[in-house]
Amino acid sequence: MVDHIILRVTRYRPESEAEPTAREYEIPLRKEWSVLDGLNHIKDHLDGTLSYRWSCRMGVCGSCGVTVDGEPKLACATFLEGYAPGPVRVEPLSNFPVVRDLVVDIGDFMRKLPRVRPWLVRPEGEPQAEGEYLQLPAERAEYEQFSMCINCMLCYAACPVYGLDQEFIGPAAAALAQRYNLDSRDRGASARMDVLSAAEGIWACTFVGECSAVCPKGVDPAGAIQRYKLTAAMEALKSLLLPRGAR
Amino acid sequence: MREKADHTELRPGPYRPRVSIFWWVRRRSYLLFVLRELSGVFVAWSVVFLLLVVGAVVRGPETYRRFLDVSATAGVLLVNAIALCFILLHAVTWLFMLSPRAVAVRLRGRRLPPAAIGAGNLVAWMLASALVVFLVLG
Amino acid sequence: MEPFLWLLFSAGGVLSALLIPALLFLFGVAFPLGWVPPPDHAHLSALLGHPIARVVLLGLCVLALFHWAHRFRYTLSHGLRLKHFERVISLFCYGGALAGSAVAGYLLLSAW
Image 1: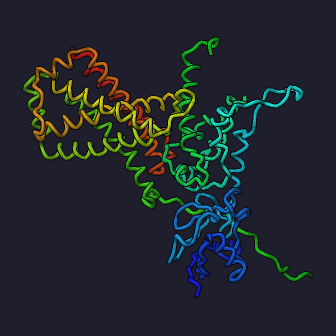
Image 2 (image 1 turned 90 degrees about the horizontal axis):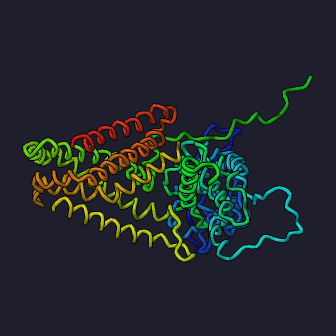
Image 3 (image 1 turned 45 degrees about the vertical axis):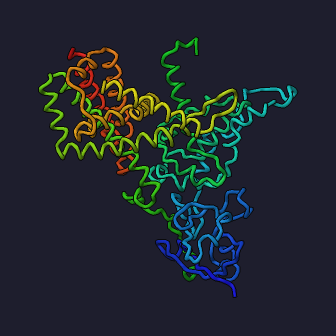
């Protein structure tokens, strides 16, 4: 006799309704099942019209972000057993426009990401014959934590500043900028500063800290942002106090 | 003449829920955050109160004594008791939760864990408080 | 401007966290309630007579006021969703901090 659990899933079909509604589905409660397994069961056996994103089902692709009982979570990394006896609310990720059911429009993040130049910026015209860039383990440790970001956007869903002001650059973009700023092979810190130091850059952050609390990969974007505030402030002080030649 | 074609209506845009003005009541972590930020108001009150103390001392022993009496009245005492709670909230969050994560301190090449910075802050806090008490009480 | 305001905010945060708890405890709670006998006027007057004490107090007051200003500005702007009034809010907050600093400066520097 298999246990069951009810998933209360948000449904939104823009062609036929103006607002999302909740629909309950009773699914088997298997010991090792995640919320994603539950959604797959619904789609395969109960209601094929349910739309949601997923891919790797093991917490590395960042596709399956949803809101489970009010908390931003990866559906594949959230286990139903912990929510028994239920019901479990499954809603789309907060702070993003809902396209359909659990699918949100992540265009805002996709437009913000290139603005922080999340790649190694090197001076123009370096010949390849010079060989590869060398990096010590200690140098790699400087940025390694911030390189763990899987772009799942749970941090944007948790960030109240982003919820209030979509112009805010946001935790993941800032953390990824820091990942490259702190990389010893990178020469792009000044190129990124304009974007990060803008009013809607890191200065809009008030260190709520929720982003780091929900990050499934331990990136600590809040820490990245606060550290960058100090860096940027020191740079601003230097450019104010020191004559041009000394900088 | 074609009949009205069988087509799907143009879809409205994606759904964007409104953010309520009480967004910060919905989650405990948000509520704690707003309380933490409101402690700033009591920092300002403390400055005002301290300047009142200074003003009373400057004007002479009689004014100072009257000021001590006023600060013992129920209303002022209540405000300061509440203020003290918020000041402690500010100190605890600032010294042990916020600043340890906001700086990267390096010792001999390795980064100090936040707990170590918090411990350092605790020592600094105790020393500063002891100094204040020693100076004020004489 | 933002980086400098943030630096003032941070400095104010550290100073107020380290010094205000003891000060407020003594003058706001312990002396009024009689838990600790308050110092006599002569002692406090002598303490405040010391230029270093006045400078430190002035630094504390100014930085703590700017700490409040920066934090309150964002609380109003984000917390009450008043982003449209950003200019007015900033004027009120930083202006208030400046005014308070002027009062503190007058009290602590010119009264001796």
